[in-house]
Image 1 (cartoon, rainbow, N blue to C red):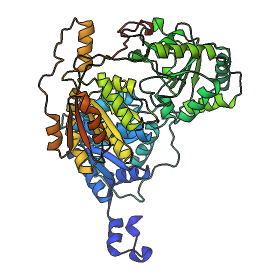
Image 2: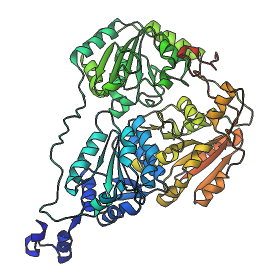
Image 3: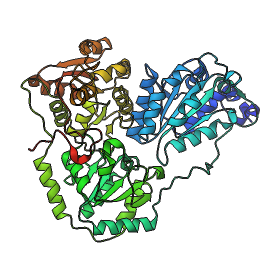
Length: 584
């Protein structure tokens, strides 16, 4: 026991012995548990219910990033998690601190991002009494977390923390909340040795399946061999499994064309000869036509969401469907599946690669897709000196050579970035897909930059979404983070306006924003270099100067307001009914 440690036992200085003898509280145990899990950085915002935890962090240092809003903290943690492929960590106080995290928790759940979130809570003696800054975070987060805990005993802290990280970052990844009552963080541990996490994690109800079933792999092999028009649809599961190399080897070995979901972008090199673009509502004509006409669809790590499928009645109508997913709940949920394979994407691909089987003859099929790719490219009509958002994305791609980490909010700019920025690498595309969260892109870029300090990180934002988390500009100055913020400024809620134009007879109800801040002055107020682009002539020069600098920068790029994202699948329509398709 620490109480029996003496100077003669250790040979330490007297002050060090006193520190060892000092009674440990629940907060100390928590911070030690974070160190034991290898946590390097925590994003958060303090308050009354977590002051004990923050004091323990001060005494047993762990790097903490004080964001300027809890939403900034959790989106930064999401960006960190997406780039590192390990759990991001967040701390917030009780009540409003915890509820300000809810959007980010839901976002991480939808997009399968591993987070461990610590929320302060009022003392257990007053839970349920409407105490000051009390909120039922367990009840609030149950539908939007992979799991949640409320700590009742300090002896449980190491076990709970170890389990939380395991749950968050295994199987289908996701957020785990640990609710921490104030009296638990303050409780002193005096009984014997400090509590430790068990060597083995015992969760009998949680046993993700990683290895694929042999017979199902054999069925998939047979289906691939017999196919004349096979197509691989790769989602984010490929990236979460670190299976990019295996996927590339698989499609090259058997000459299988491939398309990505929005979240799966980067799973294959954006300029690979077998890649035919993003599928779905704003996917390429070639990708959506390939899904409509394929006779075998191999879904690897995607969840068949509605923005991908369009009208389910006409989705892949001629295809035998193979669905590889680590989450058995997703298989058959939306699209009937002929060959289900519950497995980790890397394990499934390795199982397929280990078997030598007859490759399908895809020569005619690929020639057909190539002809479509040439005939129906992405397009836009130039507008003189007025900058088009598509042109801005193309310039950014040229300057970075496709090698940057790109983050976005949600909306038109997100779709243009997905269409026109071809990613060279995996874990380089960070966007809010399932929940579609405005305000996500900028703080996510901050988290990504902390994760990869030597990489070029570019936050492509809309003018409206950026204003939701603009206060995080403080962090760029404080930590000299060289994040480049590109605001595609069309002075409106772009995607809302596009839908109002297309489906509501141009009744622009509360979607135009004629009064905007001077973003260059705003950047200057935070000590950040700001640029404004008004014309096409100055765009490439300013983009190059800002992006190639070693300092943070904000670029206010004024773009054409009435510009739409095409092609598009209208709500309720099938992938074969795209509008805005033009022959090249």
